[in-house]
Image 1: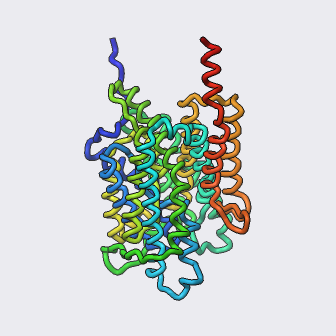
Image 2 (image 1 turned 90 degrees about the vertical axis):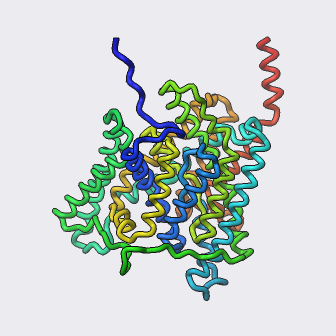
Image 3 (image 1 turned 180 degrees about the vertical axis):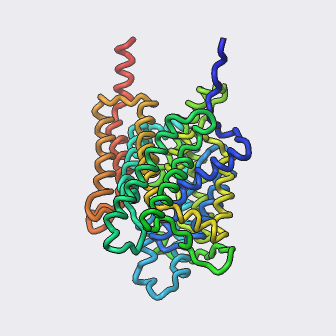
Length: 463
């Protein structure tokens, strides 16, 4: 009689062998890096400091949450408009870059306290109350719009070409970028579907290497510089991050602090995604241990808030736990906390060495785009998984209303108007994803009035 094969994968409290652990950690870094660096570039924050802050905040998050929640902390897109408004404010126009960053830092640090307070309230309220406020119709829909709102970035990155291309080579460069991104995308999918055993846990890294090799070959044949190794120019090997200290500012608090409220539904969606996939793997592996990740929402928000305080205190942007990293864990079935600790430490080391930063920067944008098409799609698919796992009744009018409103406001606001993810309303601009989440929560609570009476009536009829 043939013995049944042991399923491949690592649960949060399991540690892979050292070589595997390093490769898994690198895979987590690869998917985190582009978005985290992009936030720094858009807001004007120092890139190396942002990278270092991401690793340090992740490490602190994992330790503060008792090594129970496998999440990676990266720079959040939700805060971009608020931070940019401070960095570009006319009242601060005469200040140096570091002075502007210091002012923005104060708002980022204070936003961390909002997440901590929310986490403490959620821990006190209990899961039953949270499920009423944030049911799967809300958290699942939010996960869907998070993934789909990033679709534009993925497709644009897939077609991205190097800077300073001659006009005569422009069309060729665009065509080659599409080829590189498609090679990356389809090789990653093939690796994730057809590789078996230990190799099946590294599809993102293998896809990256395949796309990188394709870019190197195509660049050599066409002369188009898809690989560039001197993005960050420095005289020495070491490139110590430039740390700055927060400077109190009420303008910064007013602009940045409220955004923390809008990120709570996003964090909730991430926790529910993790809960589904980790317990599915535990069941598959025959583990008797139940990983109650969904019950740790309050703890997650406390850790997230402390991550913001730490990042903001040394000069990094505000952040959140990354959906890209969750997608990578779902695809590879590696939810190991030691892997994320290693990723955080390696990220901090990378931030201090110019050649290592340039090695990451040398990954062509088209390769990142190919990976992103898959990863962002998986984030959206996880939202569907949340609703399927919680058996959401899609024939119930209330559920359809909540889901419909969140999807349309979130996606319509992301891609409409100026396409910057902001909705102009009553003379102000409000973030689309945050608005969709808040409206969805309020609509669900409003339509839930009378639910208890309806349930009791159904129960009486059944009896």
